[in-house]
Figure 1 (cartoon, helix red, strand yellow):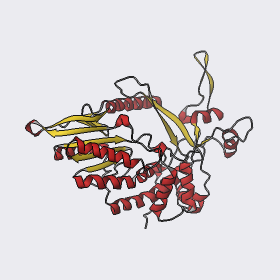
Figure 2 (spheres, helix red, strand yellow):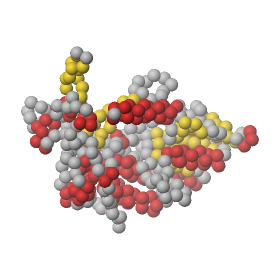
Figure 3 (cartoon, rainbow, N blue to C red):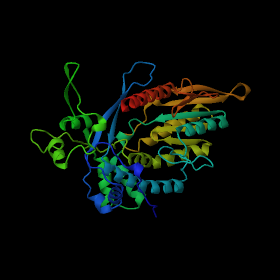
Figure 4 (tube, rainbow, N blue to C red):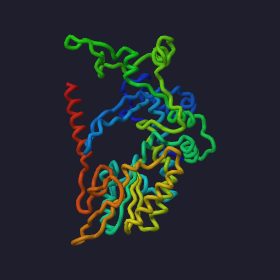
Length: 392
């Protein structure tokens, strides 16, 4: 039995996209009607590239991340079906006894509170406290390469069916599954240029290419359905389609309202395997989306066996799923003088200054913010300052 799902005013999307703004009641009605969901003509995601230069000891150039966001109507549907899957997923975690293993994208309450729940700061502290309690122990940190982009569609489909207890997805679920796996996407700047929001303008006596209208003046609905067919989808022979479709057998767009629960669900059986491996050894296992952490009492040999076991098992979860060697580390902690912990990097390129986990670093005595975490804070502060300035 599922609990109700209710949109609130703060959930309504007001950013420019292909569809019109929907009032609350209409958005709720569409997302909760299986017939309307099954017949929904999902729009392409809009994509832009987020670019920034993170802190790095060596110069490697800026970091690029594609950001894709759904139309308003589609986002409400994705949110509704995320809710349906999340309820089933949480029940399955309890049944399997691994509710303390996957950490990301879930509301895990702080002890004795009714607040917003734990965040990565709490999860990092919990892990470091476990290390302090274990004493002589090892930590194995693993990272999955391009996780969202490599989720296998067949495995995801079978897990979706399993969660809702069917052999074949019903039409509404099937429509949502297709929309998030065989998703369509268009470059936002190409769209804006086709629709006349980007073009040549005169600045300081020179012609430059740029936005012809301020973002706050953009229409809520970027174009009419007729304009979409002609200018975006290739209906006008002089304007070829700029829609790209994911024809691969893997990958979902990170950032869609349903993508986080699918990323959690995808490795539920891997979580069972890893919990079953480490718990008899007196250890613990955590996964924060694509970040894996294994804590085990004992020496380096115990940790290296656990690392190899995890890397061997994850190979069964899709041909594209793999551990990123550059972000793999094994750190050993030993009780030293006055009961304090000392650490040693046993294997890997990270961890020379202690275990790095969820933006923090632990050397056995103190917890530090990672340099890249501080760099990210400074970047966000600068972005917010510029946003406030431009809003005046």
